[in-house]
Length: 248
Ligand SMILES: NC(=O)c1ccc[n+]([C@@H]2O[C@H](COP(=O)([O-])OP(=O)(O)OC[C@H]3O[C@@H](n4cnc5c(N)ncnc54)[C@H](OP(=O)(O)O)[C@@H]3O)[C@@H](O)[C@H]2O)c1
Image 1 (cartoon, helix red, strand yellow):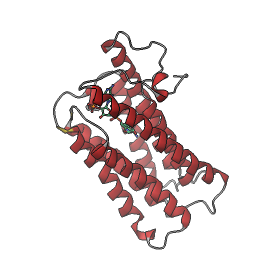
Image 2 (cartoon, helix red, strand yellow):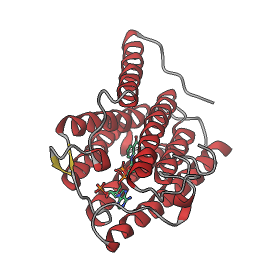
Image 3 (cartoon, helix red, strand yellow):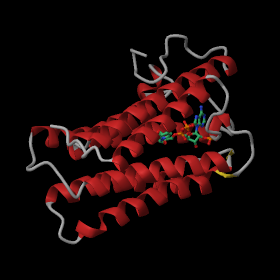
């Protein structure tokens, strides 16, 4: 069961605007007109990546808490789990940015503003809509909790593998271990698994839209990353896919 919003003027404009923004971002990135500039695709301008990442993952927690506030103190178990899933996802990223990742570059200011806005809208909107939940926990809800846990755990595991590469020396290395043997960006794949879990928990149409946008964006970025590896490392295994191990 998917919870569909009332199609009033605000919702129609909001959904169209959000979808169009995502389409423009992904189109401009795929055509090399403009892409989010950080990590391997940084132009060397902006804030240090660690600072930028802490900002862009903290503000969605603030947005989620602000929109959940009206019902948070008297929340049902379903509401608490949805709110916890969204905030835990971003809190994990804050902690990883602080204590796990070793960043080498900078994040461009416009990219920082753009990502922070998109994440804050997603987190804030899902927690706002969470005022209305499914009537009771069903099988999909329990599956959602399991999927979310698997996604977050595997996402963290692959971040750890990336972080360990930096112990071997500065710069970029060919990732090894886990599903890195089968795809350039398995950490992106498991991020999407987490958002699929959040969709099963929230069940709002907007959570589906967020999942579609993240899937399109991360697929495109993983293809660019795979190409980047192939150009930088002649020994990069040709059979490795972009994002979905064994498949794509
Ligand atoms: N929902 C979304 O749309 C979305 C979008 C993007 C990211 N995310 C989340 O954020 C996570 C990280 O994404 P990201 O794009 O920042 O990942 P990333 O570019 O792969 O970088 C992650 C960390 O690993 C380092 N690293 C990456 N490749 C390396 C290599 N070959 N050798 C050594 N170090 C390497 C990076 O260092 P440098 O900083 O020096 O490159 C950075 O510290 C994702 O897995 C996902 O959970 C979500």
